[in-house]
Length: 399
Image (cartoon, rainbow, N blue to C red; front, top):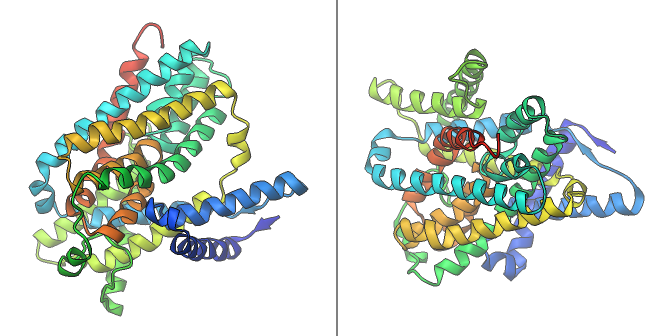
């Protein structure tokens, strides 16, 4: 069964509505801060798995809109990045970057060690480490081609897709429970903080934001320019030593547009419109990504790889609790940062934002977390991950 562009868009919208209803009515999901797109998307994915098992019928979605939605989300992150605010949070950003790099090393040590103990190629452990978990599908696809062509690793691409998908699911499910555990150790801002402190950027997506038709069109134009120029820039540097993923280029163009226009006194970006477009893009992207998961591919993972990935998920939770939370200050901001770290440490930056929104929607804004996580998770992590991966490949017993 094939759903076209419009059918897929309708399905994604229904997934979001279903996720909202489920989280509102199921106290366990609400208490553990499970993001609405994750709840709705996984429910549909499980339903499609049951349908395939019972009747052999598969539902295929038209994912043409998925990449533009993801890029629009990253463009909105760039357009929300005020360099003056980034400088004010500079120390926390640097500290969080060190925490993130530490996880990259832990993931690769754990992956290579367990792969060796289980009798697997160490390269498989590396592929099921920071490449696909912190790196996501894009980084996994790129490095799996290298592993297959240069090192002769069989089924590298299929393994990369499956492990990145596993991470996306666990990243969305793990952040909420970790935050729930850590919230008992800090004083959360509470409802009074929600009322007195205006949320910024992606904080509290349900908060009412006053917009106008003209300013909304201005924001759409800025996002469109970010997508156009960012995509062109990614094409220009492809194959060079400066090659970066397309979404990073789009984010970079957004940062330049926002701060350049303001420095010249030409235009001041209206963050409430940017956050609205970004939140809509984020929700639809996650709904499409999760409802189209082929869970039977995860079920088909060989037992040793499954054991390795479960160990990686447990390591992520422990790292968020005992390292991320403590290093980042053992306060409410540190709780939100830990939830976000689970999101992109196992899945992707959109998952990290959804995890943090699920917390801040109930307990109040965390300006620091929403300042630091998008920039580290969407930009710095790709550069750091590439360096860490190459260092591990230089080890004689791996490469």
